[in-house]
Length: 276
Image (cartoon, rainbow, N blue to C red; front, side):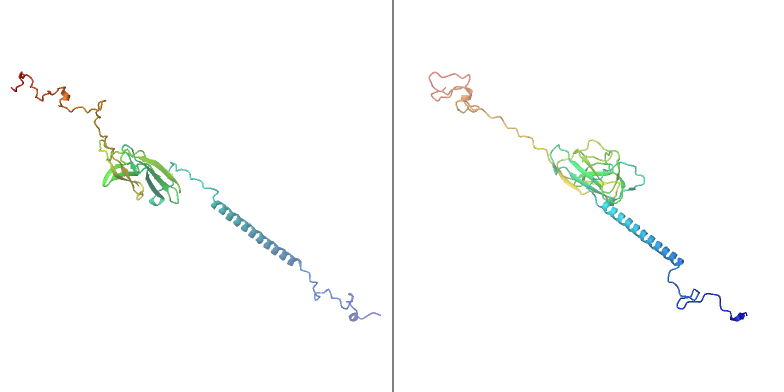
């Protein structure tokens, strides 16, 4: 006898009480999915990359800071190289704010025939290199006495000498004065300066306003000639004083014993002792 079609029991397994079903309505097991794991891995890699980049930047900054400190701390004082004659292309011309001029005399007073000597120093005090003519053609040393212009180094100048100077450079030179007058175009037979007080100053004919402080010195007069004294007369060995000129002893004449005056030359002598 066949069973009715609508009353046939289901062919699937009978669910066990207390065990969750495997259907869509069942509870989750709690394990992350593969997609979640991939997202977490990507975020971890990004965070690690950010940390690495930050560490590298910090190391580079520390190295740069340390290098700056080492560069600013000199190991020892090294004298700058002397100024060199060089091409001036690409460099600006020195201005008065870039330079200083110093002038000193070798002595404060010079004896007769001694030539004064002056030490001139051109120093760069600016911040950038510049070029300047350092020859006596543009650094004029002038000697004056009051309002009288005695001598100038530009009256008979040598050739120019252009220097390229860097910050801190100093260019010393010596200028001698032969105690002679000078004028423009070097005329000859000028009167020589005499003894007295003089003043010297150096200025730049190329850099406007550049000048040194004045230096005062003295030219001494020649010593006076020696005074001639007459030779001393030698005294006789017996200690007697020699007779004066015109004295009887000087003429070897002996006075008469009776005190009579001897006759003049050519007069007759009385025989009786009477006075003629």
